[in-house]
Length: 124
Image (cartoon, rainbow, N blue to C red; front, side, top):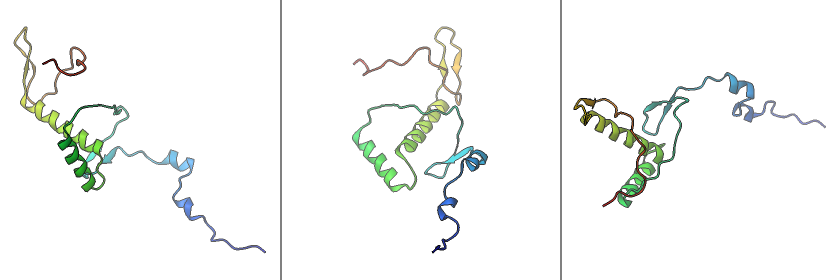
């Protein structure tokens, strides 16, 4: 006795075949938890950064992420760091000590480092 099935597998609509994956255009913009679109690029590799932050700020950040749908701690941290850097870039001018000419005007990005940052705690 043959039983009649529902015909099509309903999971087929949810699982893409290898051909569909190849044909699907890749999105160029991602939407973060705050609804902002961030352009993504193949050269936008992520790196780990370990820093010491006060407990109070960490708890406030965790509470913010908990109560903001779709937001992650990494997104919040990256957005806050980006905003702080833009603020510093817009307010600072850097002069060359030897010539006195500006290396960076207001609203310009900071120039590349001459050497790597020193590791560890600053000397008191």
